[in-house]
Length: 163
Image 1 (tube, rainbow, N blue to C red):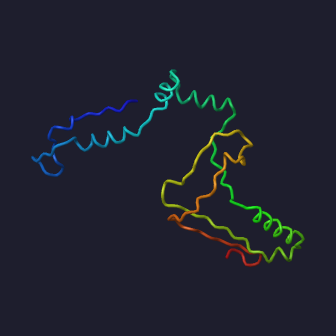
Image 2: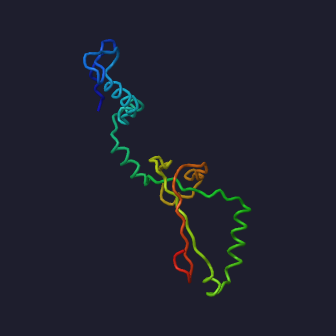
Image 3: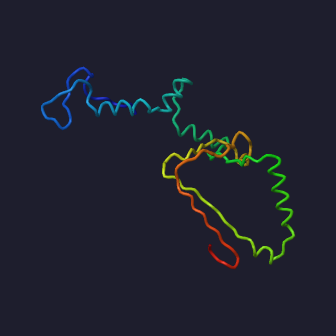
């Protein structure tokens, strides 16, 4: 749907806000906002028609992706583990593989979650076939820079209940 701009050409005088009878040069403020919003709007049908020469609607694109068995999924967030990290994790697990019930009752399980106040969670969606989750082109390393948010931590032990 094309954006319709109504208003002045930008060279007339327009009324000022809050000051009846006074005028300023330029476009009405509402028109400026409409223009800036319209500047960033891209109609995929128009773009594809320009590239291919055929009108294709978004439903056609979705149907073809579904026929190719491609699904829109989030990137898998891979842990940046080095071979040394993997070896240390394996040794840690092997050292505890023979624990009995008494040993396991001494473990404290904990978890943490981070919640962000903003709307941008940096999620990237990719089109991939089922079963390709761990392929390198479909993985992304986690974001490590400091960001504002709230960290919630909880722990539970066998005898202590919720800590």
